[in-house]
Image (cartoon, rainbow, N blue to C red):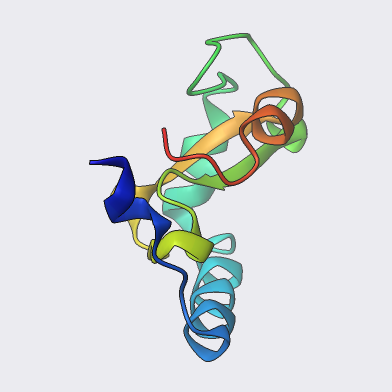
Length: 86
């Protein structure tokens, strides 16, 4: 299964998905997601302004900026994950 995620997305596709992610950050859905103040990975209580948007399947691996592929995570978890598929 790991070979499936070795696909790299075209630069144009990644750019479009990043733009979608920027728009999602302005929605009520995202504000509600970070408002809970809990990292989706380590479950640590985190101030909402310190939570970051993580693509569960990274954009570089063909992931999309859609609600079921995005998690609110602390900076520590997001940095540790980098472009790994969770």
